[in-house]
Image 1: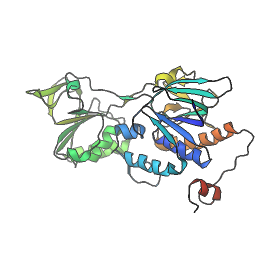
Image 2: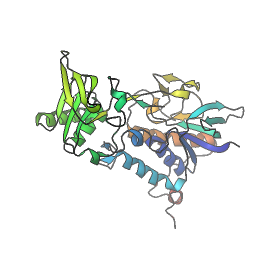
Image 3: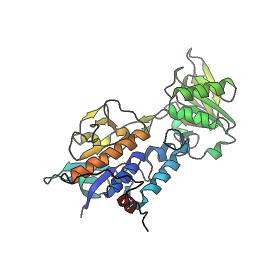
Image 4: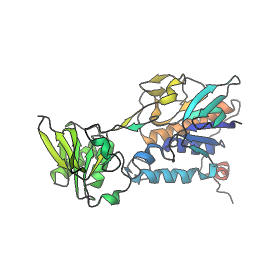
Length: 341
């Protein structure tokens, strides 16, 4: 039998988890589906130890710590998670509700759907240089999970965006040596991060290099670094024991692209009142949506989740008057949060 519910959230990253919280405050329970085998989305899968500096009230918080705290926050609402399964089918039934089917055969009969799937079925952009695939998982990596294991290592970081710069600025004094390689002089990361990295490079704490990776260097079959071509096509050998590639993600909406939603450049178009898609009853929050002025920030996803929750409540019960309750003073909210003895 299908699982009957009011809401299915697709995606268990920060936006999806906070969506559980905002729905819970309105006494709406949710089921959460994610294709990954663990909770956390991109934060948990790609950069669990990455420091995040723009979460309100936290000068700095690790990505995995953020996920852990969100999980703690939603405990009172008993969300049910269905992990390691992708949503393969979504269709509106004759009664206006939705039939949702996953890759493992789990079927839902739900009144609403909230898509919080980040960049969709994302994959890190791979290092395609000759020989790289032979060392994936051993010397070539696409995420950092245990920084303490790098203490005595010579490492290379590839990339020019926020992830590459954040890790460079975080690890320069925690490893034996660090080289940042970016194909251009211009960086895509935050100006403050670029400025900090440049200062560290000038002080000799790390090496900054601009060029294109041509191939993996080996010695008797063992990894020993990268061959990099500079702007004048001169070849340079950069020795290292570990390489971390942060070239961003290759977004793939997967089945979402076939659900009949209005899409612009692989993102789902939504309004900014309800964060509803072109299909009534289907909402989208976080990195997967787009609208005028959209900023891909975790805190933006939190804001979107709050408004989407009120929209879902109105959708489920159009005639019910909605009153804004404050968690600080509302006895109703205290009860829902489990604060009453």
